[in-house]
Length: 294
Image (cartoon, rainbow, N blue to C red; front, top):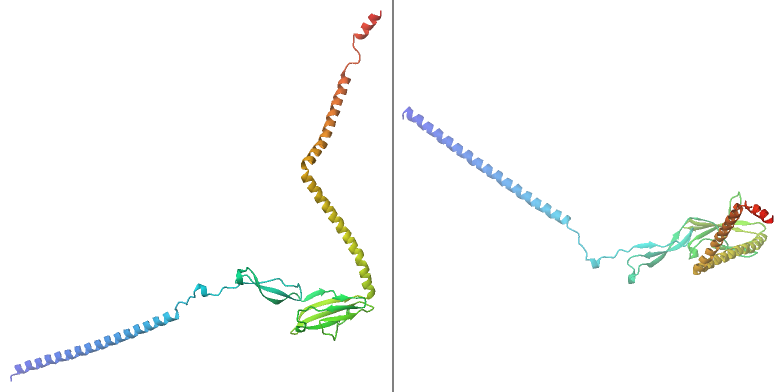
């Protein structure tokens, strides 16, 4: 072969080689692109599945609450508390319903419960007393054995003496000098009420009893007089209202009498002044008489 033919064949082989190489590279690129596209589609599918799962979970978590039918709902009951029976210590009060009472009533009592006020109840009065003894009672509610009671004998400027008797009611005999007692009512070792009493001597009690009737009699007398005066005023007003025409005429006549008297006095005054103004002697009367006499 000639050198020229050899160069042509070599150039042809190189061209074919380049074409084959380019085809292989294009095939690889197509495969890589397809793989990337498949991977992207797979990721997109997984993302869509996750989104759907999240949406379903959110829908489950935020599901609207179930509503009950109106007839099946419970009626709201409003509670009202009554007044306590005491202003201090331990008492009871009523608990009432203002809505939802049976029979359509506006209020109904549900129960009675315990209520408490200030602990210190001041000075109390005995249950009963005589010239020899006095019965004193602590503040309590039934049952009596629910609370504990502590009695103390009070002494001025000294520490009080705790008595052995721990019952709710005690009986004390009078002595030659007045005594002061105090009772503490305890619930679970906590003081819930306290009250004091004064036990007078027999002579002091007699003096107090003798002074009370005089005071009561004076008070009754004053009240009776006040009631009588009030009744009299009421009847007087009723009489005036019923006989208003006669009362009005009477007062009119009374008021007209001074006016008539004043008019008469003014007329008399005018008459007296007119008489005073008349001449006492006529000028030609004396001359006429003298001539007639002659």
